[in-house]
Length: 127
Figure 1: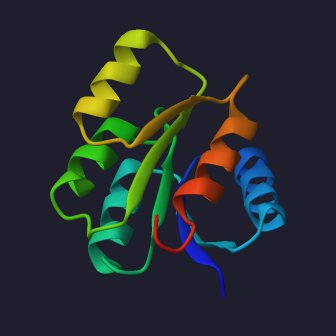
Figure 2: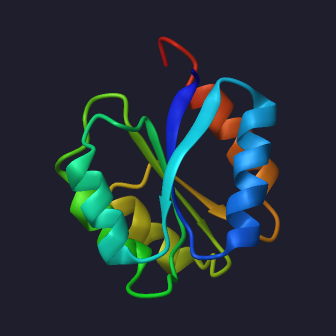
Figure 3: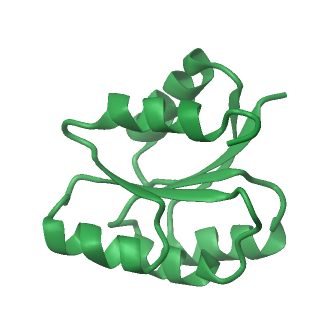
């Protein structure tokens, strides 16, 4: 089994692409997903050690990724990473996400491959 990834993404197309991309990159397995802020926060609270990486979209079916970042900011375990992948990659939003504890921030339109490379790098044993 690979490193456990939790997706917070309301687009089935994006979820499928990320699931396949992470699996192809090796040693990563999407263990679950949420389409809403409330669903993501509940899953994270119920599975505090069930993930090593959370990939969070900003605009969800209900709520935002900002609420997800805030909810897991203080409860993350050492080594757990949270990254943002959004279609609304402004410098203001990037700064806000990093202040809320995001480890990295990526634009869906141009940085999906960079996200996969980041995941491979950060989820290597000993990272």
